[in-house]
Length: 81
Image 1 (cartoon, rainbow, N blue to C red):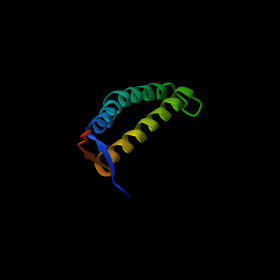
Image 2 (cartoon, helix red, strand yellow; image 1 turned 135 degrees about the vertical axis):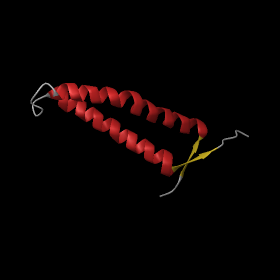
Image 3 (spheres, rainbow, N blue to C red; image 1 turned 90 degrees about the vertical axis):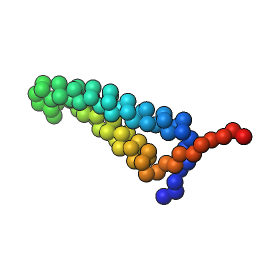
């Protein structure tokens, strides 16, 4: 796979998104899933299914960002000259 180039500013934006998802959004989603699971039958529980889907989407984005930041992107210093 070809290495993609990225500026430091864009790298920091991706890093901030990863940190936000991991530290704020994911814990909220986990709390919602645990709450919905405590209500009972999960097969007919729309809250559980919806929040579980959101948690999967967050995890998918976290994996993608982590992989990009570590393996696929190369940071370059951009000079507008």
